[in-house]
Image (cartoon, rainbow, N blue to C red; front, side, top):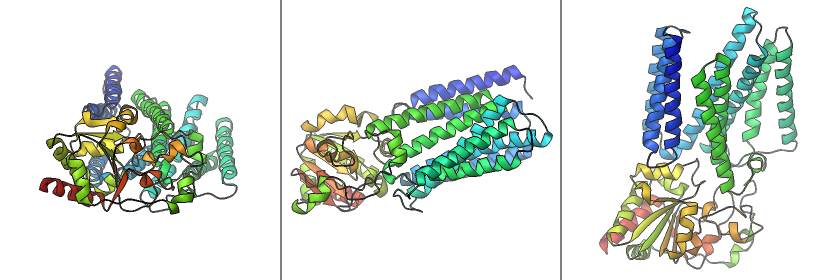
Length: 466
């Protein structure tokens, strides 16, 4: 074992790496360096913990490191960008499960040894068990919805909220009983964990696919809070700091995303948004009298080749088609012809926070060409062409003009103000919100139907042939 003061200094260094790394994640340009710095901080924390404590044999530690590193490397190399939200959900769940195991082990050790658990330790143990179990089961449901193992639509039934509330009250009651009763509490201990797992399921199944980015962010916050509570249980300072950073940043990101959708967190969690697909808004009621104008790849290529200002709006369809490299090639051709290309990123585009930024960074799109919604919206009026690739709800003008629309009031990208609009989609299906898009019927909009990668490749070929 190393001296305690050296262990604390190591934890302080690791915590500093986490804080500075998190700060650098705030910009796409510095995010890779921030990620590496945070990884070094975690390595330092792990090494210091292994040298400071001897909870298991070194053989078990080495086996765990090899297995964990191998699985992590395999996942990093094989998981597609379209599946990254599912992976994040699973990792959140694993973090919650780890908190349950550590706090549960401490509780069982004290209980079986007949040791009295101090009240403050008992409180954080119960919080770690509750939040960790909710995070675990809730994350599994989020993964199942994103992976389409189960329906992405909200699952509700009469009395569901009452059932959820009663289970939550039951957990609080049993947890309080464990803090005050000196008798054997193992049945109550296992019951709390079981009810918390059920609670996590009940909290996530009523949430639809449109709100999955918010759910992922919130579950990430839960995993951090559970880790911080576990840090108090085992008196590990770096775990407390790291958990607090993850928990607080997740809550802040959740708030930002709710604001981007003009909805409260309570509405996201309990509103069952998107349950009645295709029924909301004026467009859904009157689209029969409207026309959709389609465009060929040849005509669209001519517009883009001679456009001076082009704004690309990426969406989940771009990720599904894995077309980020082709869109970069298209942008290079437009710029070679004298035009400028910028990318408009909505805060909730895709299926997880920052999905589009990561996708475009994979194709080496320069960071200075990525603009968030507030920075780019006033530039759409000057754009010759707005190229929408697989985005839907985040460009729906009904959010501004139709009080009957479920997304009314949601801040959107002002694509409809561009001089010409090209929307690339497979068909006319609605987005995650389950409502039709008024932009598709706009007089300046032309629909280029087909797979995003195939359509973009056709545009590249046509421009090269001009």
